[in-house]
Length: 182
Image (tube, rainbow, N blue to C red; front, side, top):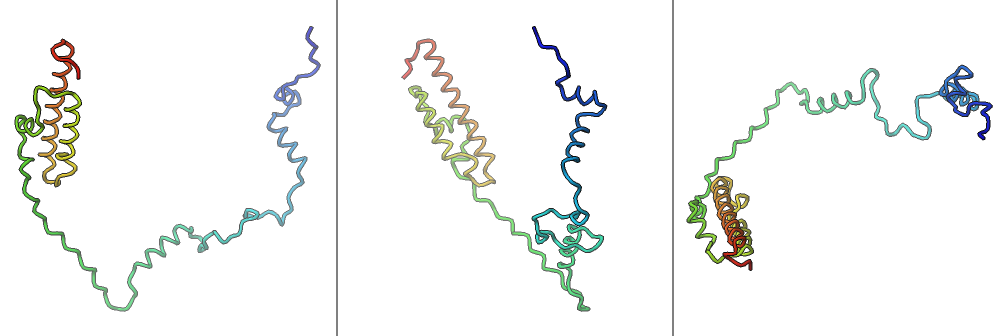
């Protein structure tokens, strides 16, 4: 048989029975335990920190605003009575003529790219993947002059398309038993 409850064990219930909330009772207990601070100790400073890290400020002006004003005034010319000459305007760089299009980038027809890749009927998937990497090493748009990136991108897209088709053809032939997987 359970022991009868003579008093509530929940703090909220205890506090409400006495007419105060738990928070108010904790605050009261803290106030009773700590003596009030002396009037001399009440300052706006944190104990243990010196004021060396605080920038001095003018009265009524925030520190950040004073720094902005100082930076602005430091850029102003000294008042000598003469107007200071404006700094020279840098000339725009002369337009550079892009180098001529390399011959290999002019080859963008699928049959020309297939010849560059060396595609043949006896290629394996490993051969094709190696040729893709080698082609990208030599023809990638990131390694050509910016003026020729469009041609290099088209060339890479066509090469990837041709290799993907050849890989699909190899997979289909192996699936139907027309070619053994090597």
